[in-house]
Image 1: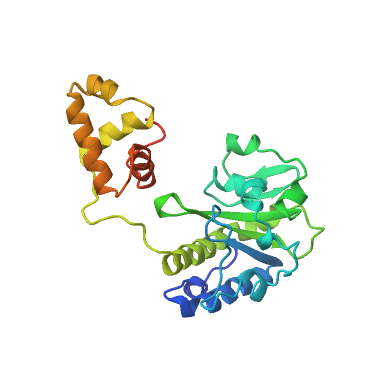
Image 2: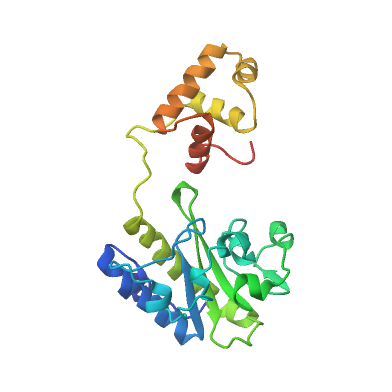
Length: 257
């Protein structure tokens, strides 16, 4: 890993809105020194891009991206259409990518299935080192490091040298930005679910009805409904689907049920 100093981490960590711009400038300096430009996203499901406390777009004001209509941060379709964004939903470690595919330290079969047609146009870059940032409540951010030399498409050596450094700094920047700039999830106090509530939700998550769950758990249908209702209140959910969704966000439901 490229030489790392604690001051680098401290400089990109945000504690209040006044820190946002200096933290972005610090991240920009680290990337620039290594021949890269930063493209940050605090939530790949959100069309908005990170801003400072005054609402200035960091991509334009700090990271040096153009502000015309072709700019990546103005493209509302990039969250759905870019292979880079898609990969961040299936990978939580840094990877590098070009039109020939994704490279990770450990194999990921999901990445091999991503459509790479017209990669440069859809990703709005020819190559990048990317750090997915997976956070609480299922939120996913990402930071793409794009080479200043647009003809540089083989990033294997830089990936080995810089990926870990980029990952540490990106996660600190995006995670702290999200805490400072995002309203808390509406979860009431005492939202911890009971063993029975979790068990009911796990069966509901794979499509079982209340009657089927009652038979599986050897409990009455009314008991199952009681547990489901209590879980929805604890999670401030308005219906069964949202209850299951929020439980999954909080890690009560495993995809390997």
